[in-house]
Length: 113
Image 1 (cartoon, rainbow, N blue to C red):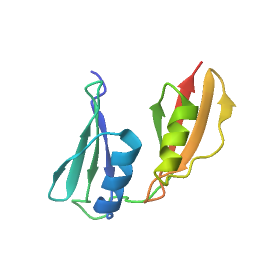
Image 2: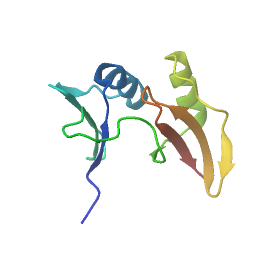
Image 3: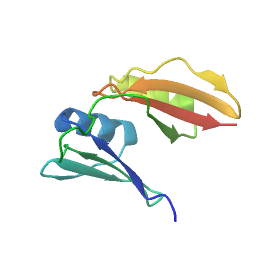
Image 4: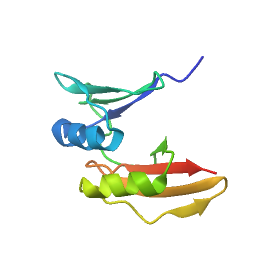
């Protein structure tokens, strides 16, 4: 078994599609009620509208973790695009900045030492 990708449910497909396009720097493959962002390592991040009642579409206790080469460079790039990032803070083995998507999901960018 190996990791394939992550799917996030959203009722705000257009806003989230624009946000993740800017965040990931990848153009999505859009569809009716979904968008797929193919990542360079062969995995993906997908957005999808709920297809059954009760699917959560807002931020909760999950955190999307994305590794970056430089927190300084990524924070500057995202800030220039209008995406607010926290100040970096140290964690064991590296540092993180935190941001939030249009649905209120927490995202942390991680630079490993």
